[in-house]
Length: 160
Image (cartoon, rainbow, N blue to C red; front, side):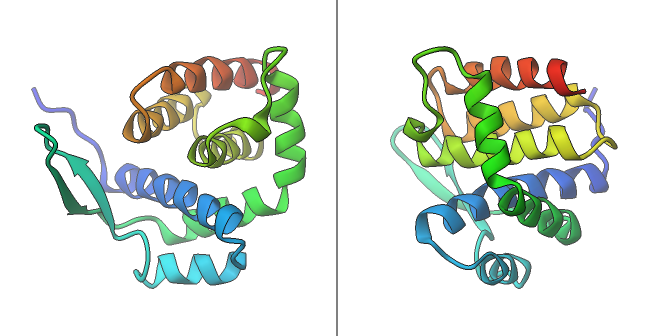
């Protein structure tokens, strides 16, 4: 039996993906937050993802619509609370691990996830963790998704 996923849930998932991408662009492109948000909302950026088809073949696939209000709130919230979130993440990492040394995409993903766990209450923590672990699997194939799962689970137990 096929799993039913509402359009609203799909649009929030799309907003999370776009927020991770936007957070990465803002940090590494040193671009203004409002400009990046405008580009995503207007569809100038973030409309396609690369899908791996195996056999070293990739295809550009158009992403579905996103909840633009939620995307904007999430992206601005991450930027506004970035220093606080980074300090918090550093606290939860195992000794010897440094948030600053993580891959840029992983940093963006963890910033968005931690912001959402700390600053929203309308979505269950386990649902948020699953969403961000799924995003981690979209970007990484090794140990990163497992680390994301463990780290977010630890953070959620402490702050929720």
